[in-house]
Length: 498
Image (cartoon, rainbow, N blue to C red):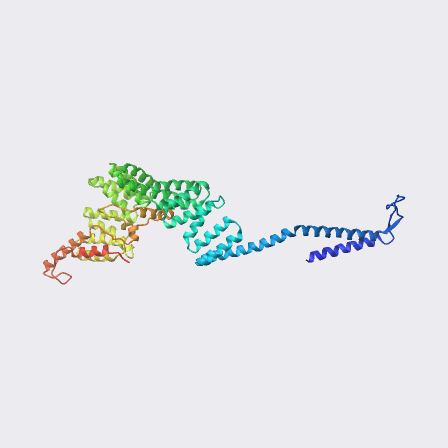
């Protein structure tokens, strides 16, 4: 406001100075050469000061008249705009209240306010969006789906409708529907990150491993997923498909995919274990050994040790030692390598060397795992220390479990995963590089090899000592040979903890 006052005052000062400079002695004379008619008049004189003032007043008058004309010309439009602005503000208020009511879970209020907003907005498309969002926020999924379905009729809201439908279908288990909507949207808009995420999740949830890998490749090209994450996800998808093909008896096709997965992610033990198994079935144990050695250097895992030992069945000691040395060389200081060596020494009957390897491991761990405790019991039993062996077996019953070992059946198949397990692995291993163990997470029974044999040997040794000394055993009763300790220990080991 101040600047306008200053401008007006400045103009008036300039005008006064001009009038003062012109003075009152200067005149403007007008005369006419006409001799008759309206244009015939005598000489007229005007003061220049009066002329200047009249000119200024006239100019200001013209400006005022023009402004008034423009104001009257624009008045209807301004009135209409004012009404529209008030309507828009009311619509915004209704939209806000609809969304807030939805977030609060007030379904009735959300519907009412969404209807008000839809009527005030005057846009069918925007009204549907508001109605769908408020319904979804309040948990009224059926109504939200109806509005998303209606959005497909308009080009403006088609993508929004596809997104809402796909995500709702994925959440409710309609996987084919989610795949259809998200795939169509991804084809139409390659930059739609949501379409990639929803399509990939739906295909994985539907166990369409090959389709999911194809989608993953497209997403990687379009920068929708990081290269490392894509690599690990692809390894899991290939392994899952290889496992399916193996179950159908199509081992050669499964082998190609399993080797591809193991090459992509050598640290993913299930891929290498499956590839090694299929190599063996195809009569190529040497290739299986090489593959296990490569993976062992990246991430030694007990499943790989079991697979490697299976390959050595029937081999002479010289060949066995040579192959085992080649594997140990890949990761000589790894925990699993030391356990593998200890187990090999126990197999040979060299309990002293086995204990020399196990002893540092037992001291390093504040709470040795049940697996280590069982190995310690085996060593003590073969060193003719039945009392210590019994103590280690009792300790094994309450010792913490090893996640890596929990998915293994020494006499059966490693990583006997269901499709749901593979689905979890796609994201857990794919996104973080962490190898989950579903049976460990579900507290499934843990079966360790050799428990019954050790227990029986310990019972027999203690019975012999008791007979020799003509004394009862530790329980205070007459020694009876049998599987009592083994049965109790197996029962404890198989009991889920929680």
